[in-house]
View 1 (spheres, rainbow, N blue to C red):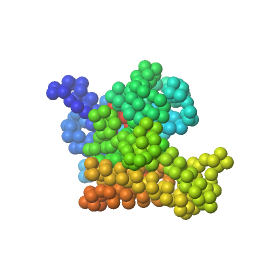
View 2: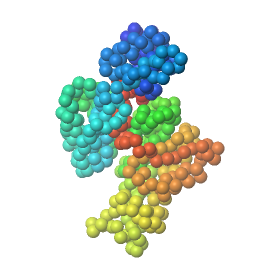
View 3: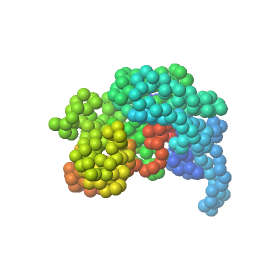
View 4: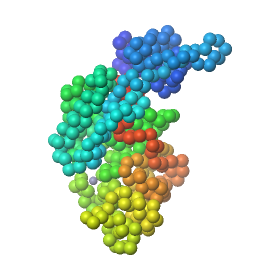
Length: 402
Ligand SMILES: [Zn+2]
């Protein structure tokens, strides 16, 4: 939270309220005295702020804790169900919207398949999903903190403008403004990979200080958390690793250039390579799984891997190595030890993960890479939807940092 040189009384109150709420959120159940110790605020100020939070229904007393000699202290915690948030994942094939509580727990989900829809119709689908969730709340938009959206592409997170989303044909779409005008609640929009990284910071305990979370699906993008804060970059493109050229003789990418990471390591690249490999080896498990229409899915590749199919393993390992090569670059630039992988391709599991790890280690300085952990994301839920909701927790309550 940035402060002008002289904070007004109101700003100080808001700042103190955010500090106290964050202490309750991260450390509750907790006594007022411990909140004062954690925040550096006086006990009188903490008492006042807690009174305010209880008045708003955001915090409550849950009884007395163990005594440490004197009178047992009254413990407080955040009322997780006191507010909710709509989180939306504008995925490649499915738009998913959910109502979540303050812990990112999903209360209700609605979704629509959007494969093949044009940009205009896609916006209508977003409106339908939001309207459906608001209608399901008995109180309309009362108690709704706002709407958070995670979308592929480059997003100006300050204005909620999607500058470029290749799969949806969206250019400079002011989605944040559109939704805010229509529903009269705060709206935040961020790139989906960044939203997922924010989910991991907000809802994991202990909160990681530094983290790279890489979404590997049809697109590939990284969310960077540095010093517990989401790093957007100067032009909101931090972590856009999917369109880094890794194969100078490579095939054409949907961005119009050739040999981008997405052309060799995305879900589509893997399926395309698997199909070519299967045709070369008609006796393979992969070849067996080709559909009557001549197609394979990522699930088929996974099944072939499980069956120990050598050509599937080669295809997946190659895709993993390209990703590992780009991760080695990130390790060299950022020296971040915790790297988390998620997205549809991560379902390929161990053979893919091993290839990513091996290549990342081989291509970076041993001194840096020896302490790096590259893991699949913990199964805490739909990371993009949760991260989209966390955007609002940050802005409206100061519960996370973005
Ligand atoms: Zn590209």
